Length: 226
Image 1 (tube, helix red, strand yellow):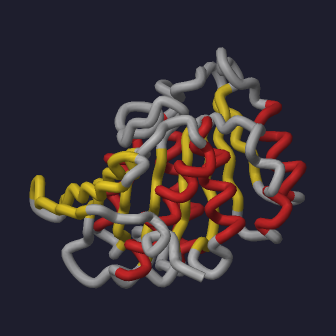
Image 2: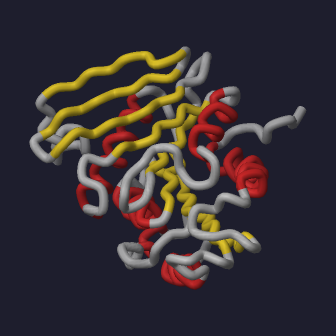
């Protein structure tokens, strides 16, 4: 059975370094252009974060460029971060394929464990990728996720699942994350007081919670630990 990249029908591929440790890769396919922005650590790659956006696409993530901030912060700990620009936004199967390709690329770069993250529609993408890539994906983080498309979450089989949701989300209520948690049969829902769908009030809260959560899932020392 071909790998995600092997089944992508790649027509051409090009990469350029945008800044030190930041690489932009474009992969041309008959179904559209897949873009991957990768922040690499200065040393060896120990683990990876692969992050994706919502139904409209995008690579910055929720909050104020949360994915970009995570990439910079965790590069110091040997973590490669890839942000995925979908070929066809809002197409669940193709978007999941795109993210699976980025996971494969991260593993090829040396990552032993990968956490997949997704915002809104991207939460369902992240769950579906984790369900298929059981050996590569160690855990899932969602931000204001929809529950549609997460019907397969039970197949996470107890792998770590962390769900952030604002209690004033104007598009998807916190119950959406709670439903995904219920389907998965495990996981933690973090309700963010006073925040909406874009989670623009909770950057620091999210970053601090991930600082405590990610090391155990990625097999890394806790930042600041002796």
